[in-house]
Image (cartoon, rainbow over all chains, first blue to last red; front, side, top):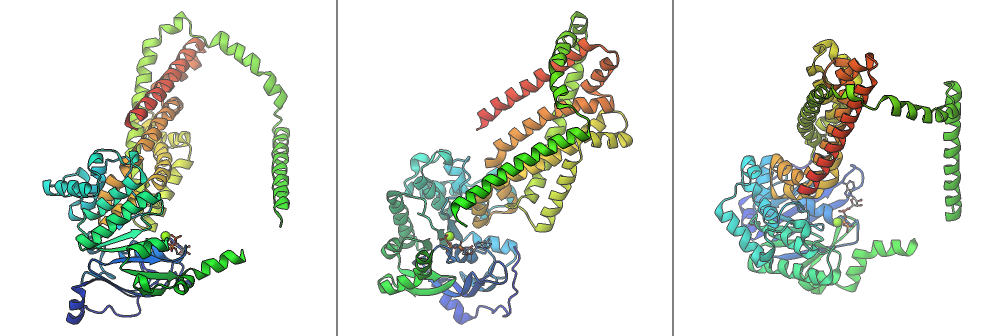
Length: 277
Length: 262
Ligand SMILES: Nc1ncnc2c1ncn2[C@@H]1O[C@H](COP(=O)(O)OP(=O)(O)OP(=O)(O)O)[C@@H](O)[C@H]1O
Ligand SMILES: [Mg+2]
């Protein structure tokens, strides 16, 4: 879990000028790099800013480093160097317990839903409150009335009212993903990280999930960052698209500025490999 | 290399392995003077002997209460040793599993300890422990505990790695504490599998307890030893039968319980 390459730059304090930008900038990445083996860089010098309520997609070929980059943001994967400023705090150097506090404000949604399958929908959703509780409260499942009401209202909003007490292994993929989203929302996050949320779903469920995510960014003001491999979906939903190839950011602009040429650049390596093999 | 060549290579390798195994079997039976044919020929005779001598007669049935009380002692010992070992093994497995380890050094030492405990046979543990604790039930308990613990750590670790990586990741991402993650993310999905390992170990330990009882002079093993020395084959048959019945009963219960919680 320790960072393998030490930071060569001192961590800068967030100055007042930067703090004012942070009022609307929810997340800023500065020179983020990641290497698993201290030789090859999987993520190369990424700078990125996300504003409040923005819906941003990261596209790129398989192995480009989308999942790695996303997990560097909440330090599920420790970046090798660079700074992460989230909600006005530099979280790069935070201790484990301080990082845990920050993670409560960052929800995460996974391709394989990552639910505890033998527990009910309700229990899984309430897991999102753990960051706000003591260890014992969490283990004993002591939730306040407000927390339970919050969980129920979120489930209702996602159209899962009828499945609250069902065990998660009895749900369809689309329903599971909605539970995953509910668990993230119950954290009351400022940022939602979604790693290929629709990659295991059929087109109909995919649309339901993407519509919900879009709605979340628009009406709740939560910033949503989504890894996608379908360019058309990214074009349809995003306020901004980021193109990643071999760990480098090749594109960062409005969807309408994404040209055929850009797409070829972003996916180029993969297309070449396909031709050669 | 073409695919046909590759497949042919694989076939040759397979043939080679089979020939090698046959050679080793033949070679080792030469060395140890073990005549395979003679061994096979003696099977019918053995069965006939068992049928005539090991069937419990009326005299043996008089020993039934004694057998049952000793058997009960053995069952209790196995259950207590297995459950306490399982609880300890759970925590070791958590620290040793790749998905839930706290750090690598702790994980490595956990796995090493479990491996040492596991790879020394239970009989060897009993022999060593007899020296320090003497011929009593405590020796039996520790011998069973140690070997069960070693085995369960490994089984639990595999169960945790298989079943819970996804849930663990999600809970860590919400900002859950380590033990929230363990009790709410790992335990619910691994519990049934771990319980069935526990039942399996209880079965195994009833069999082992018999053997350990021989060494420590306790439980059903003590009784077995006693009647064996008296050449009282009828009672021996009764003891063996009762062990078989208990083991089957436990297997039956374990299946029932597992279906109930699944
Ligand atoms: N734990 C790890 N250890 C070593 N290398 C890793 C690890 N995780 C990912 N990688 C490597 O990092 C690169 C980027 O992986 P990543 O999963 O981030 O790609 P991705 O863009 O999400 O791909 P996909 O679309 O297939 O999910 C890959 O080459 C992968 O082999
Ligand atoms: Mg990925």
